[in-house]
Structure formats: structure tokens, C-alpha cells
Length: 313
Ligand code: SER
Image (cartoon, rainbow, N blue to C red; front, side, top):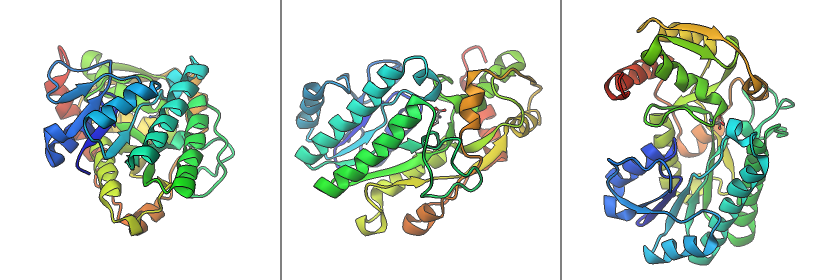
């Protein structure tokens, strides 16, 4: 990793991965690709090519002699259901462009999959690495297809593409938006703003979750792991903690008074189709994955950070 391109650099993961890579590899060696939500405070090299524009994308790769791509651009589960065709286009064309350019320019690629790649027919508890994958959202469909595409490009062209299935990621730098797991972020934003939160899934809803610092560390670790330790072209289950919406509300209320009510909408069906917990022993064995942050710690970090940083907070 000497010259790095991060696509989706200003999304939930990119907003934190980009500075982490800048700190590690030097700000000049990390190119942030994105066209919306670019914070005025961002310091670094920015390019604005569309992920579906192969010519523009290749021009960026050539211009900076890129050797590694963290391809994060994606429309998430809840937003994806509003426009499934666009979701397919952005998620699949974008990935195929990156993989084709990886063949041509010998790039190493990181691409995230997700718990949303599973569906209602998947075993829910300690979901195995290899199991039934019949997702019921376009986001999930694009992620299963993407997993297969990565595997194909590894088998056919030997592309060094590495991947993990992220759980719901909890972070504070970007406001909650297009994801189903975002209730676990919104509770902090709304709780601090108004002391109330109307949760869009019911209190018993339990899905795997992870604090962003663990997600970023895991992402960099799998990319830095020796080639022989990583199953290339495979998306590894990656887990940290699982808790219900109610358990999260209880933990938050240890720090601040938030009146949480529950009004499930279409996102309930999505959350219900996902695993409750993941078996990530393959990641732990192969390249030494280990999470560090539990529910108690992430709650404290989120509240402390948002108290400082929430506009009018
Ligand atoms: N955070 C994602 C979502 O909710 C899951 O990968 O869509």
C-alpha cells in the first residue's frame, strides 16, 4: 500500500478510514474520491469522479499511480429499497469497474460486504461463514452478487481482493442516513438533541453491531495481513457485539435521560431478515481478528464525542 484510493471517502466508513490511512501512509498518498458531504474541514487530496464512469475512474488511478483501492461506495439497505435500480447500478457497476481496473493496473482491493447479504432463510444465531444467502433487499442482493464477483475475479485473474462482512456499524462523524442499523446511531443523535427517540424497529430487535474504531482497524488489518493468511476473494464474517434495541436504550439511559418509544416501519422487516449474531472464527483464526469495543464502551465514546461535536448539542 503506497498510493491509496478511497471511494465513498465521505460516507460512514470512509469518513473515518480516510484519516486513519492518511495518518498511517501519509496524507499525500491517500486520494479521497467523493462528490457529496465533503466536510469543509477535510484536509487531503480529493477527486470527484463518478464510480460508474470508468474513464474518469481510470484517469484518477493513472494520475496518482494508485496501487490500492478501498472501494466503499454503496447505497445502503433502507435507502436502496427506495430505488432498487439505482442501487444495483451504483453497487454493481461500481464494483465491476474497480475490479476491471484492478486487473489492468494490478491493484489490491478492499471491498466490504455486510450482514445484509444474509436473509430470512439463513441460520440466525452464530451465523456460519458458509451458509444460505437469500437476502430480501436490493442492497443485500448486490452484496451477495458482489461477493461472487470478487471471488470470480480472484479465481480468473488472480486479483488480490479482500473483504469482510461488516455488522451494523456505529459511529458519530456522519449523521445516520440510509442504513437499517442506523437506529443504533440515531438514538444518540436524537437523545442528545431532544431527550426523546422514536425507534423504527421494535425493542427486541437484535443484530450484530460494531463500533467504527474496530471496523477501521479490522479493515486495515486484513489489507496488511500477509497474503498467505487471507482467503483472497472471500468475504469474512466480522463480529463484535450483539444487543437488542432495548438493551441499547438501557445503556444510553445510564448516561442521559432519553425517552425511547418504538414505532416499527418497513425497516423492521429488513432487520428481522438479518442474523442476530455471527460466527467470525475464520477471521480470528486466519488473520487474527479481535474486536476490542463492547456496548458499554461504545456508548460512552458515542455520548462523549457527540456532546462535543453535535451542532447545538
Ligand atoms: N449498515 C448497513 C445497513 O443498515 C448494513 O450493512 O444497511
